[in-house]
Image 1 (cartoon, rainbow, N blue to C red):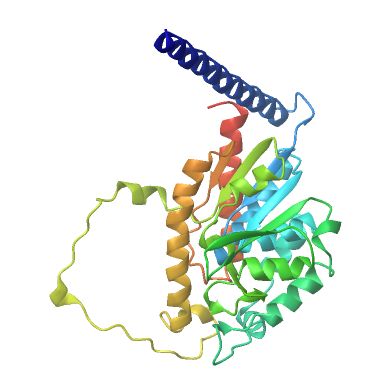
Image 2: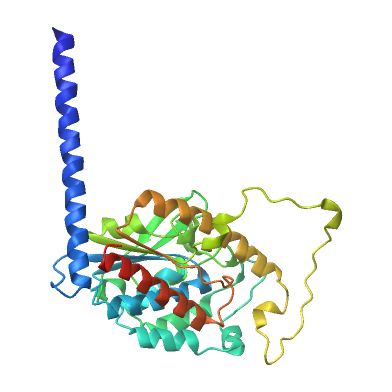
Length: 334
C-alpha cells in the first residue's frame, strides 16, 4: 500500500514539474513573440529588457556598436550589468552618455593619449596603477554614483584570494568600473578590507545571471570574446615540430607615426599577461552563455587583440553589424 502511495506521489510531482516547465516555456515564448512585435514596430515595449555587457578590454568597444543598433531597433534598455570593459561602456550609458559621445571618446585617442593614461608602478601588484584611468572615467561620468544613474546598473568584481564574485551596485561609478576592469597582473587591484578585487571577467565574463537578478524580463547578452566562426571548423588537435621552435624575444622600439604603440614590442610582457587572462575569459564566456541561456545572445568577434585600444572604430562597427544581424533574425523569427 505504501509503495502504491509513493508511486502516486511521484506521478503527481512529475506532472506538477512538467506543468511548471511548460508554463515557463510558454511565458518565454510569449515574451519572445512580444519582443518580435516590438522590433516590428507593432506594439510598445511593456516589459523590461536587461543588458549583460561582457568583458574584453579593447574588444569591448564593440558594445558601443551594439547599443547603437539596439537604439535604432527601438529597444529600451531598462537595466545593465557589466563586467570589465562592459562595466565601463555600460556604466557610461547608464549614466546618460549617448552612443555618439561614447563613440567619440573611444575613437578620439591616439597612442600618445593612451600612454598618458598609463601610470606604471614597481614593485606592486600590477604593472599599471590605474589611478589616471579612474580619474579620466570619473570626469567622463561626471562623478556620478551608481544609485543616481538614469538606468539601474551593476558591475562585477572578483576577490582573487577566494575566487568569490561581488556585485557593485552603489557608490562612485568610476571606482566600480575601475574595480571591475582591474585585469590581474596588468592593473593594481582594488581593495576592501581583506578583499583583493580584480576584473569581474575572471569568473563572470558575461554577467547574465546578475542582470537576471536585477529583475529583467528579457535578457540580451553581449559576448565580445567570441571566437571567430571559422575557428570551429579547425581540427581539435593541431601538431607542431619541436625542432622548429625558437626562443621568443621582444624587441621594443619607439613606434613610428604609422605604427600602433601596442605592436612595437611584438608583444611585450604586459601584453602577454593581458592576452593570457583574456584567453581564459574567452573560454569561460563560451561556456557561460551556453549555460545561462539569455533570451538573445550577440556574439561579437572583433578580430582585434584585447590590447588594441587604438582601433575602436573597427570594434564598434563589428558590434553594430553583428547586433543588426541578430536583431533581424529575432525580428522575423528566422
